[in-house]
Image (cartoon, rainbow, N blue to C red; front, side, top):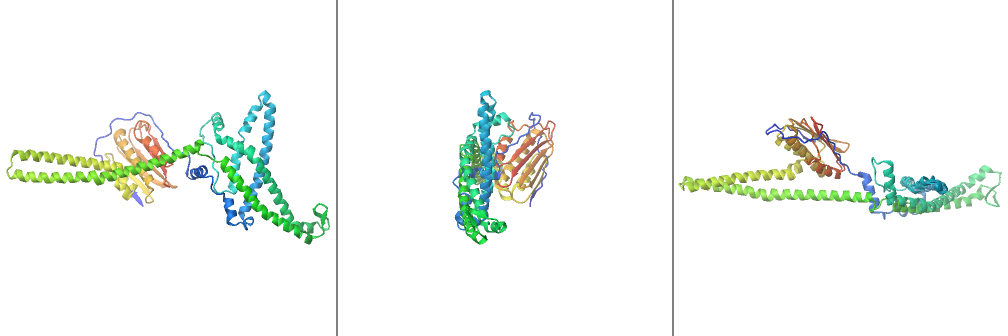
Length: 481
């Protein structure tokens, strides 16, 4: 269990000045989450992936009509046939009314409804596809949180996905619906033939004609029809799988997102930002290693060399070399002090780039070390279930250090509290100080950059700082990496 508790005493001057803003709230989140983002990536980038029903048919071609996949195909086709039939009737009625009333202007809203009819029809089709396709076809439309109805209408009319859905509803769905109705009728007729001996037995002595003009004398004479019905069900299972495959592929093509859609562009932008953040983090670690193993070691060697030179000059001065030796000794001592100061500054810079304790011991130990060096007393209460993913630890660490720096420079705080827990798979980190408040994240405090970094991890960063305090910073980041 990684737990860190530390309290650092005040060793420096208080803060100078305050950032003037009554209160502010900063929240950064990504447009898409976990499973939805992965599904959209799969739908937009790889529509050529094999349909689940077709894969099941190829895996067990002879037994497929006897599997649950075949039953799901029949249920999907029957439901799609009913949905398509209702949609066609409604669209024909709306189109006729719209054209008839358009001369007086009343029909224009009805024609607009026809133009937008692909939206609900496409949504229902995507939902119905879940019967046969484990990977859902994602919604190709942009999310419009907080937008009014006119803005939503304008946006939907400008999106290409809206017109693809309308094309699917008007051009693709009718023939597929007709095929589904035909297959459903064939299956029902085949099922009736399978149970024909039972029907003949129940209706006896009434005359039963399975073929017009040819009566069936008894149950045994109906057995050939049972065989025909079983064959019809068997072939219908394969036909249903092929028809369902056509439905799924057309839905992926017309009802799913594409890379040229705004949603796909936003997703690619989010990915590129994540790649840039990873590359930046890797470059920062490389710089830290170079400074630690290169310049820092050279400064240590320089300090040791100056120490040896000072020792040699002291010996010569003791041997009577005169004032020149004393002057040189003073210069060497001064150079040695400046080298030590440069070494301390370099060590602080290395720790600021990426502290080694964060890599070796985790977030709790790294925050505890920062708290011990902080000029304001800091109480750290981090109870974490072991190590967290590297990006999460790094983002949380720099968020804490930025909050502590702002508290020391601007807030006039006397105490700072850092509290962190992992709840429901998310790291929840709270940094609170008792300063004067009025912090403005947009005033160059560095929190805006942290918010952008948190957004890449699908988290959010919130700051509340009313005038008079206290100032609270809350970080929430998923721990899935």
